[in-house]
Length: 496
Image (cartoon, rainbow, N blue to C red; front, side, top):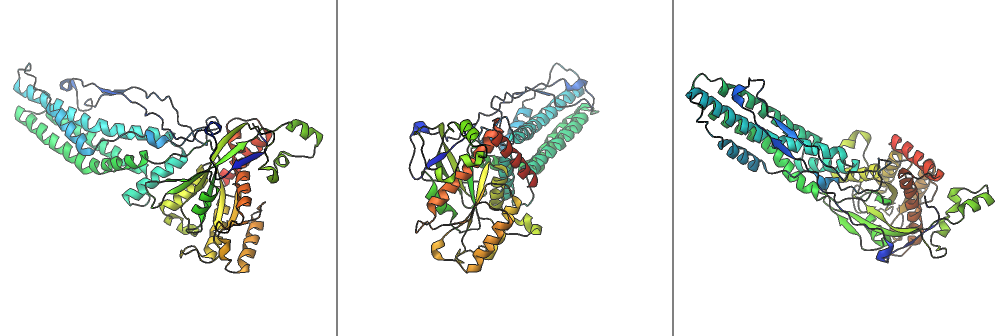
């Protein structure tokens, strides 16, 4: 692993040849080929009248990778774009009815009753297949891809469903279960009608069983499958358009109450104009900026360490040297991510379930993505939101830090040019930071008066470097620093 000093160019774009690509690409869709063969139903009993299908194994050339997989860390969260395309329920039912109507009467069967039996059996079996197989493919396809989703994307999918359906606690898994239950109901009902047509005592009864069976199956499909399949059609459009997040790029996520100045900070410290990632369930987007960081290879680190046995890896990278460019040579450059998250409100544990989708997105980013945390506060008392009082912001800070005790962390008091509500607020913040063992003091920041910006940039670089060490370790680096950091991060995940 490369260790050593880092530097950054803020507010200026780097040469394209020096930057790692930030383009987000979606993997090609998995292909599943389904072929259906129908046996002669006139020779089957009720128990044997089953839908017969064979599936080839999906050819997955681009396995989804995620941050939790130590061997596959370099990936993007593009799994949502691989979700299967779902056709409208009207299109599916019309096609099923049309294909079933193509079933021809076998004139080679001379007995009128047997001919009616065979035609009714084949028609009902074809309709059952045409209704059930697409439902099965939806369920199997989504369940297969859900297993491959990064945990952050799984949360995005669940939140999207919850927001669209407007039913608390409803997840994508529940929606798929509803489709699967509808499929099983139609399949069992189809078997029953096939049995009635097959063993009808007269040709008239066989034809009647065919007509009633077709009507009943289409009615069941409309009653139980239309709503969940329609939900999947709308859902897939939203999920497939959701932004992807780079998992191999260190990130700092800005967290805090609403209207405390997070977006302004992202714009200030980003190397270029930030983009806005719009998630399906958010009323406002998540601002995503980038910081151009040059990672410099350590020179003679072994020699320095032997000359001074008391030195440690942490001492090799001092904050004062972050802007130094030694010999003008770098191992590589990288665009690291700066993420502004939707505002979070302070809530007691018993009201945790009341968090809205935007709050859940922020917490999911901290829990599942390789991020450091910048907690932003406006202690002027002028945040402008009834839920952003000074007391609430400090309480939220305590709640978030307790939940994520080992994440790289920095506290920022923004809009310092507006003043502080009272001096006791800073004393309370100091006491809180001592209690949680913070190594770095809070930063007083004013974008308007350009106060604290350089100090903030240094701390951002410091945290990005810490996250990068973890990513390198999870990518297989044998560095003792990386190994130690990985152990620490795993302990943090368990504590969360």
